[in-house]
View 1 (tube, one colour):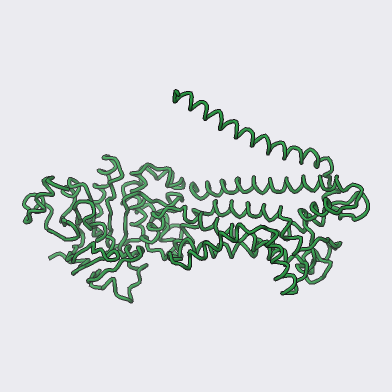
View 2: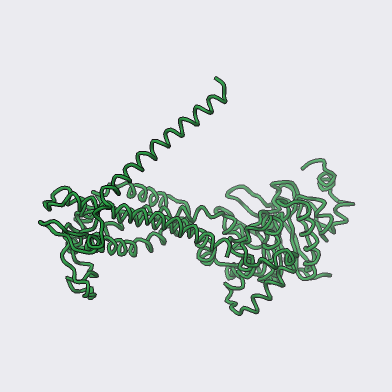
Length: 294
Length: 252
């Protein structure tokens, strides 16, 4: 056949496939927003959920989601940075680092339900943390750490070897080269990975059902003593997150407006994850520009 | 006699089992440009990198012999490699500026050495960029990214970055091979100026470059140092047959 015709045919096919994917995604997104947005109001976003009557909100769940996200990132990010820097800059190639990399790969493909059950056995039961934010945050750390580490390692590796040579030849120590040359260059990539990881945490339900629990006790937002059980900051209180809330309403909700609450919560969740993504890109781009052209 | 800044005796280097340098005896005089020439794979870049211990980065490399900078054994266990590299700067084949502004690139070494005073930094940046013959081209855009410059300008900024830490020796690994002829000429002229203050060791593939700017030339072949002498002597009246063959273009 005529190569030009083949080329046109191939181009058309690829466009069609891409178009189908875009249409599926856009309609899914559009449907969720169209169904959910009418239910989203200030009242819905701030008031507590109701178990039996209509008119409940998602205020506590929303707060729980953010708080849990924050705690799990505070635990996971330093670990991922340390592990990623070690693997990319310090580790010599040996059977040990091969084992570490394989372990990370396996861990990252673990189903989140399994991570949840592991968290239940270890953090909830063994460590007596109970169904709590800290159990959930630790489980999500397990869940997110492999991908974050991988992301840090890959971002650092993408920095050209000539930059390392330049730093060392200039009389910087290896640590100074890593901290002052390599990491600033890799920062946009690292940051993007972290924020995308945050999006995954925000939308995760399965791993939290068994660890952070499915109840959202009323919180006293004027009590900021982290040791008090009614305080929003208490890491040992059970905390149903937004994603878990959606799952629960849909599986066993008996509120008369369950469908509406579920739709509204889904819309809020999707918007939050979208915001994370947009934020990741703009922040990454801006940082990169700032780094490259001061 | 001129004073010798670097002396090396019986330098052997192995990549694993492969012996890449087979016993090099070579000295470098202060305020001279010494050119290392030879065909690809002859060991000249490898030898250059033993002088600031950049080969330490490559796994499986062993180096024996004696290399001294101002009489001090640079492979002694007590030698601080970071200090050594501050005294022996290096410019690479590919311009490798950091992705920061021109200003930050040049004062990077100083900043990390703890210099904070703005005036000191400003004057170091200006002096270094002037010495690297790139000041006039970049003085109005010091805070633009160094990556926005042309290859030749980038390379001169990299040279300024090395000059700013005030080394006594500058190693150059084919610094102009990735550049156009005009940029190459600018860098060659700059090196002739720099010679008054620094000891320069230049690896080059370009024999015209070696004959134009170097005081002494060392010819490497298959891991051996075949001949070292005043550049004029090496090019006009070499003592070794292999040198003559290489210079007259019969191989390599």
